[in-house]
Length: 340
Image (cartoon, rainbow, N blue to C red):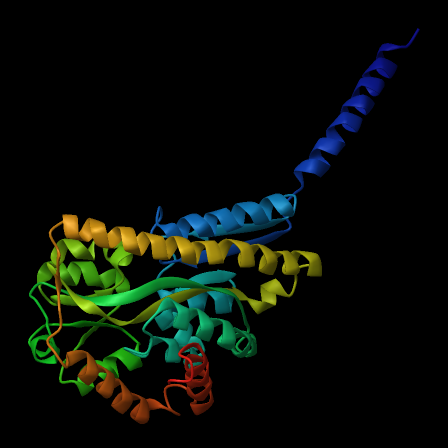
């Protein structure tokens, strides 16, 4: 008959045998990536970031964890970039402004009135992605994926049917976006540079009365509550991207690093499709809320495009490289059937 001490030992032994497989299955966190984002919690962008993070955690048995801090709690683009440099963050969902401050060639995607369809956007994005990834790597970052805001429109408290009307308005421009600032100044508008978190309060106080955003973005950020009109021609295309600290990413085992790209390649194209769907639905919602579309006067679209060409001649080779613009136009020429 076993002694009491022997019984206790055997019970402990079997308990440990049963416990260890459970612990192995549950895994344990080895790699933590803290990710900041300006995307509001509950938005389509934040939801897909969280979905991506959950799948990564599941597929790595809990060893690789992406902790997403949405809604700007980690600060604006510049704050997130600084925190990545000093190791407080290992990644960020940055806006086009933040990405372009790191890699100026990214600014080419934000040239006003450059794209006229999502087919053009998709062609250029796919064609330029390998180059962009190399440029981010040279800056110590991994460009995991781009994200989309969509085509942006002029939204205002009073109707704007052309350049003359826009000159009478107090228009916002993204702070540290030299392309938009230069374009607006070229057509005689004096823009008010602000960060995205400051826009709504500035609309409320009357500091500005005209903004530029996608349909869905205007709803998510509540800018539509202070505007009444949408000029029915896209001002430009807006985008974002998920970048990671290369120093942190390089510590991952190769299977985990490859998995990040694989899962991102599955989730974020779905995010793009969902964003485009959300924009289409948002336009219906905005109309129901009383916002009205304003048709530009005849000839205005052509004049806006002519002003774009003037801008490009001024900034090509300074705000972005001549090589990136040349490649962009080559890709556009392909999708337009040779018409660039």
